[in-house]
Image 1 (cartoon, rainbow, N blue to C red):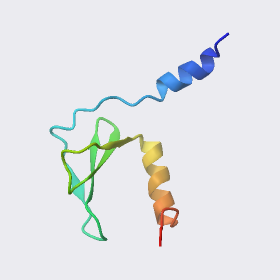
Image 2: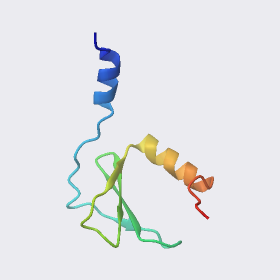
Image 3: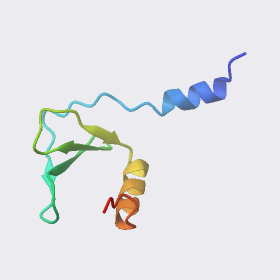
Image 4: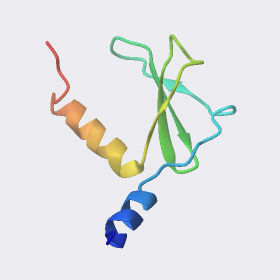
Length: 79
């Protein structure tokens, strides 16, 4: 017997396939790298500015907040 609660939760966690054609991409004026972000339909899209035709990562506001806080805390510092 399937756990419908889990199935419903997983289904609700799916992100939409956003149309990023007219997205207004923003780049940081500080730091190294070419990461760009755009705010589209309540989500945050992130892409490699050196490869704008490549894929974009899509974050919910909660996921984006966790990512930003983790970056500020040095969670992703690979040096």
